[in-house]
Length: 256
Image (cartoon, rainbow, N blue to C red; front, side, top):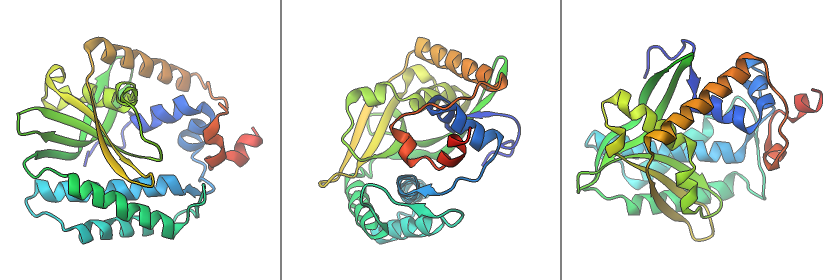
């Protein structure tokens, strides 16, 4: 854990929220309004993330969890969503999502290569930026493959099978690449990967490989700077899109 987490900072989550909808950013980060509910997709993704992270951490510590123990982590993480009611979408319910979790975690467990060395799980980084608060984040996974390549991976769940461009345009991986130097890695000699558990009828675990150049990292910093300028200037407005249907701030948005 980072002892300086409470000092002024920017996180990828905050940046992503602002890019998705500046008004949602205001409600959540500035006004600190409690969300009306937790979407089932958010709860599901977070619980899967907890379960996979626990397994990877157990590999790092040399005491590998069994599959049933991984599933128990998912169940406990799901039960932890007590602050707000969970709202279900797309015909899902708690039982159907448990079945999907069971299938996805089984696929992940079967695909894991024990010869891969786990170097870090939820590894904290902090990057100082000129004129804006530092960028902080947690890298889901740092691992070294048998050929010596070091990979930084971002774990996601998805309802549809992603394509290669999903990895090349993933801003969180760009943030990882930027943060790698603060952890002592050379970002020019790292592999980046989007690890996706796809919750389709036949679940899959996909690893989409990509990389970032120095120019791409510079462009990301410029974007972060402009996001911060917008926040500091109070530029917050609704950005209507498909995600509005599952937004827990629809009521205050309609009154804005």
